Image (cartoon, rainbow, N blue to C red):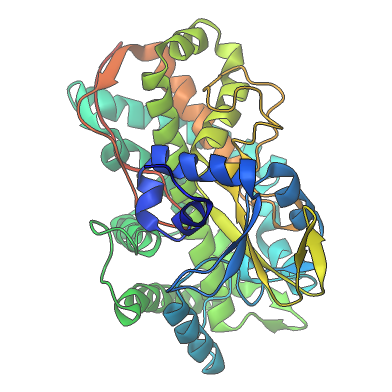
Length: 416
């Protein structure tokens, strides 16, 4: 049965669609071709405009005063939006960089920015290389077969980012568990519950943990990123507990989940495209372009939303003041007008104008770290890899926000 444009638009509200890439990209391709700024009116969500072309997403990202993050920075069901508004009225709300607009966004972003600049990345390189080597050694110890997501990809970037924050290694499993619940809230395997109250419990657990961390770092700073956040001053005072906690949460969760999705999805793409795997192994100089192709291919962040502050147009379509637009990054990253043969995985793709890290003022704070981690892992793995194949069926997270593979069973042989 042929999909209608209306059905294609509603696909963007269906978490299961993001676990079925064939269905997802059929819908996105149809929207780009026939109605690239499409009005979506779902039953369980407030209406929005789905923006699916690269050029239109870029236009909105550039105009950060005309299109703002608040009050609807991401797609969530109307019932959950109402609960969030109630929490905000009570002063109990998650307010990360994702939720903020300038000038506040610029001030808060600057608190942690130095930790992700080239000098800081250079200082971390050796440790990241050591961790990458350790996880490839771990693959060897597993005897030639593993679930690459659950046993490698989910842990390696988690270790990096939580070490940067300064959290004790004994707490890493708890952070992984909470992160998977947070981003897998719509996935039957990963979700904590199905009601808004049950999902809110995950945030409350994060709040409890990081509230204690804030107090500890203010009492005894330890020179880590958590201490920087806890002791930052804005307008002469510390961040509120909730703003500090929100900062920790975005660093601890987005700082590893998106990278683990890229690493797992990148390896899966190489398995599915053995010619590209051989090409990359024969020419390691292609690794930088291969990494960007992995990031484009996976696009871990599926969408952000913006709200128009005045009547305007996008792609010639009138957008009234107060209406929200959904920026579909998987669609923009398969746009035929920008990418030659966009459904071909090409480790040498250059240029690669993907938008997986966003664009403009909200460009991903940790983009350099994500690239460094991914490059280190593949630089260690590929020279030791003699063969690799799937050992089962890959499975993706059901989500409408952040995600990728949740299971990647593989069989492989490694040197050394």
